[in-house]
Length: 95
Length: 278
Image 1: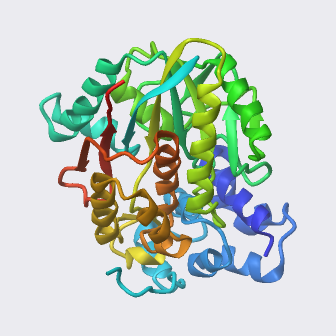
Image 2: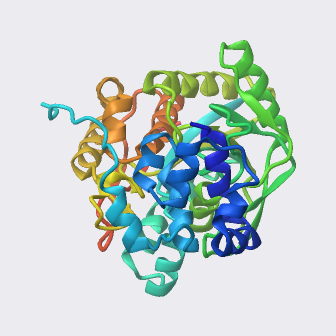
């Protein structure tokens, strides 16, 4: 995964309103400006936040996609989809 | 020579300034920060070394230090969208430079930044504790946000190195340590089980940490605060490392105050002070 590139797209969405507006208006065209693998591009366009999370994009950044309403995401949709991500392995309780 | 005179640890939740403003000075949140601020005012430190983590606001994946010291004349913040006043915070560049050089000589490859903003991890605690921004700070960023995190042992040893460095600083100065961060918090991860974007999946762990702080059982905390355990407290659970570095800087001391955050919050945050006779 191009963690850096996908994270950067999230970060631009988080910090640059004009970028977020462009991304919302024409996501495929804007993603075309970045070097992404096919699975990364598909995950972004599908709003597959669980896949992105499992491949290393922090929730702190992914939330920006839902707040900006890009890739078909809203916060309720985000919250529903992120449950499919892999949680950390459980540990035995402390004594 | 300088000395470490006290330590304080508080949360930096971005929602807190607005929540406290709505509740007013008699609200529980404001009162908890007030209790810590009173202790800070009693100590009257000359400098605050603030141990905190960035939230991809000052740093990003292009340059992401594990440890970094800010060495400038001042820093502005918050450089994020936290709803709170914007501050220019004075920085002590001499102590910052000394901590950086001493840390390197002591085996810690700490990065340094000479121009930087500070995010809510710094400005929220300072907003409540020193709103007049009269005490210069030295920012020490600890990379507990994006895995892989440094280990608890390493952060504790860093705190010990910072104490040695402070004690070799060739200027009379009283230095307080301010740790900033949550014990349990998850932002947008699966541990939230779809309930909310911000959740507290490790309240049992937070209670456990507070108990160990009250009892001064730092060695046990270091044993238990594995990366796996902190991750189960949320994808922001590594902020505990800021508290652990603080513990390294003050030695084996029991906290003189440890209080959980008030309702309606879930108890993943705590307020603590460490005072001792000088």
